[in-house]
View 1 (cartoon, rainbow, N blue to C red):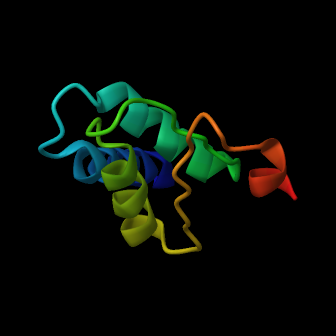
View 2: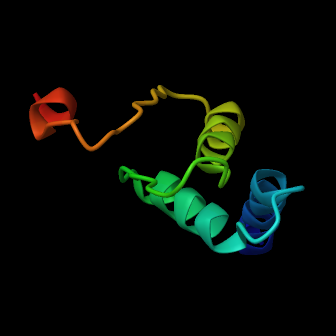
Length: 82
């Protein structure tokens, strides 16, 4: 049966995403779910909370394109959305 193999692959991917990141299991699950569904993710939080680390790990895990943008209080929507 293919379903158990898929489930094990998803669990292994989740373990690789969250490995060594304390308290980031929920964010790792959300990132993986978004990747599986073909959706975008916007991670917002204070510096040092593993946002970039999770994104880089996901990119290494599944391939694809990745970019970072540091937002400040002076960032305007046009900088992100065109």
